Image 1 (cartoon, rainbow, N blue to C red):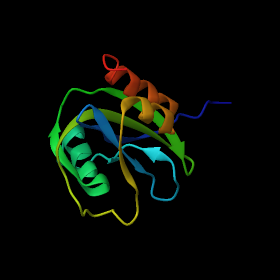
Image 2 (image 1 turned 60 degrees about the horizontal axis):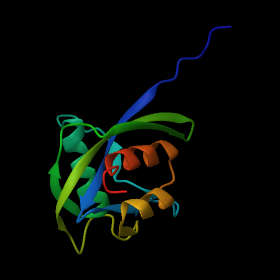
Image 3 (image 1 turned 60 degrees about the vertical axis):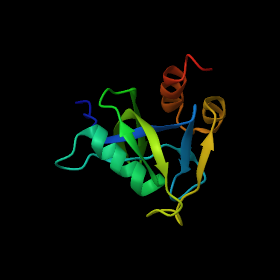
Length: 134
C-alpha cells in the first residue's frame, strides 16, 4: 500500500518583540496562547504577510525581519500546517484593532511565554530566539 503524502499549508507568523518581552494572543476558539500567524497572502513575502497578521490579530505594528527565526508544524481540522516564524520589533501597540473582541493579548517575559505557549516546537523557537536573555 502506498504511503499518503502529507500536504502542508504554508503559513507565517511573528514573534512580536517589545521591551525585552513578547506579545502573545489567544487562539480565536480557545484559551491557548499562540503567536499571530496566518496564511501567506498572495503578493506579500512570508515576513510581510506575518506582519499584517500581527496588525490584524494583535494590534501591533513594527519592523519585521526577513530572516526567519524558525519554523514549526501543527495540524488541526485534519489539515497539516507549516509556519515560518519571523521576529517583529514592535513600534506601536494599538488600543483598538480588528480582532480585539475575538482574542486576548498579553505582553509577557520570554520565560512566561515558554510556560504559556501551546505548541512545543514554537516553544523551542522562542527559547532559541531569546536564548541570550533567558
